[in-house]
Length: 174
Image (cartoon, rainbow, N blue to C red):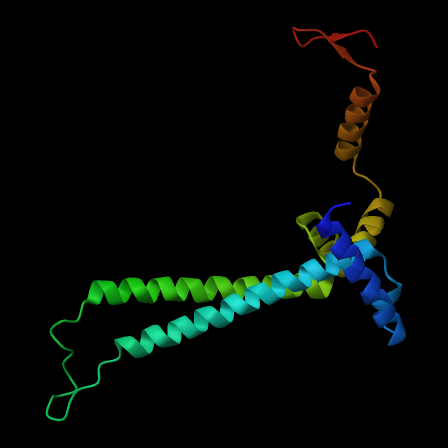
């Protein structure tokens, strides 16, 4: 048993009694589920920390570029040493960093709330939330039109091996 696994099991063994003592539902959950939720929380908290860092960086870079004239200087003209290209590059980079960090925080937070860990689970969750299973059942009860039935029967025949095609593409005996 590795040191990491031993420390993880000791964390889990100390966590479960605590959760059970205070009557949390998570106290009855499996270790895999607790680890999964912990990973989702860490992703969200990491993206939140990145968002805080990015917003602080944006604030500092904005304040540092601010032009404050001295006593007898006009406030309508920026100093001669001002570089518009650098200012634009910093603004675009900062805006991109802020947008990415806030988006990741929203995405990871939503996944944590919805208990989603991958794209397949996201698809299942969205399908169930939007009533996809009920709509699927309703559609299966509707009568099928003639063309769709013909195509479906043809595909079923091919899958069942009722058709045998040679290399020329002609059909051999049924």
